Image 1 (cartoon, chains in turn green, blue):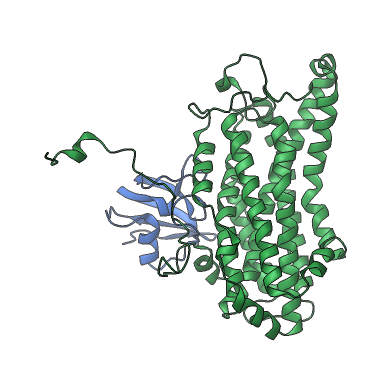
Image 2 (tube, chains in turn green, brown; image 1 turned 90 degrees about the vertical axis):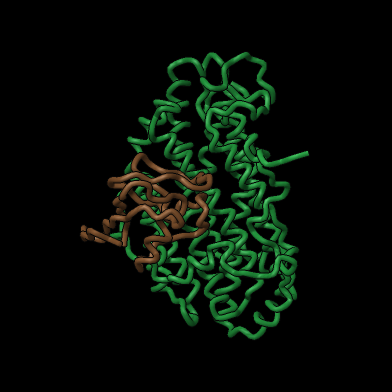
Length: 374
Length: 88
């Protein structure tokens, strides 16, 4: 059942599930089965930013003055962020576009992945500005065992879904409509559900742990340009995790695809397990970050507590019980850093993060012109 | 403003009254609660909480996921005395 670039079958898009229905033909947005994805696209487009907007000249001086163990924390964190966005800049496209069935969702996936490529570009911008030899740091991402271990856990579900999709889409139509094909499709849906859970973990937990490290420097007025870029990234990630939560909840409800609802119920334990494992991996990562010493305001213990806090918060969004007793946020300053517009600055001096290019009110009714005379 | 506060593990129930110029999040912050937030405009879902009773109206155009009884504290105002529950 091979992929078709332009599906010539005539079908009602409203009868299609999010995934594994007919492949999308006309990229049309005049009608939407799930308008939420269109709204996510609009929001993401309004967020557009470029890393070059942020001046990093102060960060270079800050970095040189950091003690060696803090340089290790900063660079390791940056390597991890680079890895996560390398994955997210391509994997939603590779894994999800071949199986998506709704035009608005298809475009959301592309818009989402594109914004991740901006994040990747910003890491290069940061490294070029902060380091004399950025190449060494990039090279280490595939050589450093601690980072490679992270890569394995981040990409495992994606790779499994991609491999299964390739097998399914290269099989004959007869096989796909037979009993074995139907069984394979169900397993494919399972792989998709678990991939989506793992993506949610990546965006909603792993990224936030890395943001905490970036902002911990800025809390001490160090590496502030970097923190400014990370705020842009955090704003995007908040939107992405909302997208993934919507997809997961739509799947779990089973209205979109009853079989997906069954799978979500069957895999409830696996979902919790994926969150649990990620929390453990993030705590291990915290130990690696602070192996040579802590920094003021952040150490492996506090970061571990933050992991537990954020994990429980994300589980709740999926209707799950907390794993760690829903602890309070041990880093109360995180909220202020994460809020993209809490710093007031003169508009000409910086990019206002909610500035919506070309925004107009389209809901003006006749009353608005009531007192208008010619 | 809170009439009723009861502790159940670490969740808390608070009753809020209509206040036209304040969102639920602002009302709770005025009362000294530390509610997680990020975007404060309805797309991140950090301030998601449960509506136990009463009525609220949405403000803005929130897009974060909300379950059947969930509200986004940053993107709603109280219309009829509302009791909300959140992790404290």
